[in-house]
Image 1 (cartoon, rainbow, N blue to C red):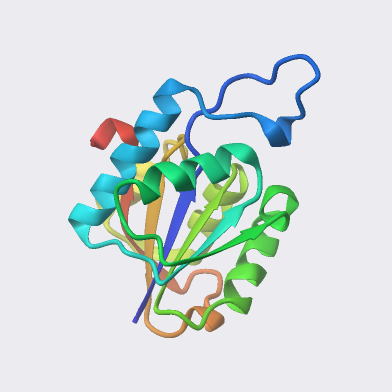
Image 2: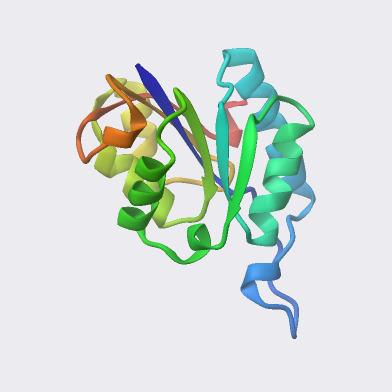
Length: 167
């Protein structure tokens, strides 16, 4: 069994004049939400062996908030998690699918699209919450029967979906 944790970056401020979208930092509520999600992950035993993190500033800062509260395993920063679509995310996950638990910190709509695509079944409450959207700092926990290198559309089970409102 393996677990995939899909975390949308925390809430970022609006881009200031002359600042690229890629360089937008978290706002105060985003920093607090990232730390709260880290604490929630630790409390539930959601500890990844490997974290793949978008290189965008708001994703890196989300990782920092998590890391203040829980172990994030080995971390790889990938520019492609800023620009790829959900299929690209899945390809990246498969390419790094050796660990039994993998955290991806990325962006929407890719996170929502991927969570919906790989979750063939799941906890009724988690599925209902996810169907209302994937908010900033939202965390989808998807369980697979085998190795993440073989993760595919419809083969996962949505075990949980946490949002900052739940914490």
